[in-house]
Image (cartoon, rainbow, N blue to C red; front, side, top):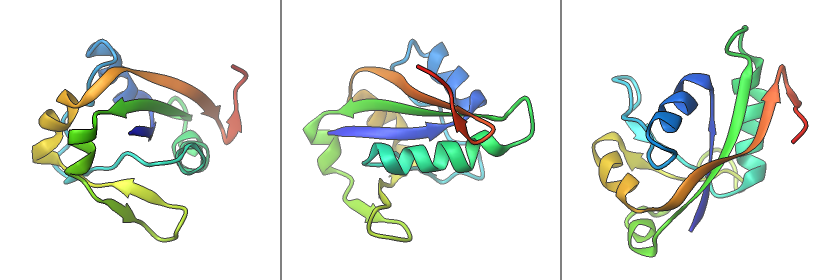
Length: 120
């Protein structure tokens, strides 16, 4: 299953430290890790939320990654606020196991700054 994750600078730096192979543990106030199923939904979050923060945190990234079928089967698709907002809800305590289901590398597929897409 192909998934997308909108993210900001801090989380992306931790993904890079992992060698682009794992998502970092959730913070105490983040009980769920929620990758999304479509680029369009991830783009909306990265562009409209992540990239509109005050500098230097005014960058939003869309990442893409794949998880194996066994991992995908453990997390039913959730709808968050509208039919186009499909997510997987991974409890924070299960993130390490979820990360083991990642196939290949996590890659950045789009970058936004101050609400605008940066050139590839």
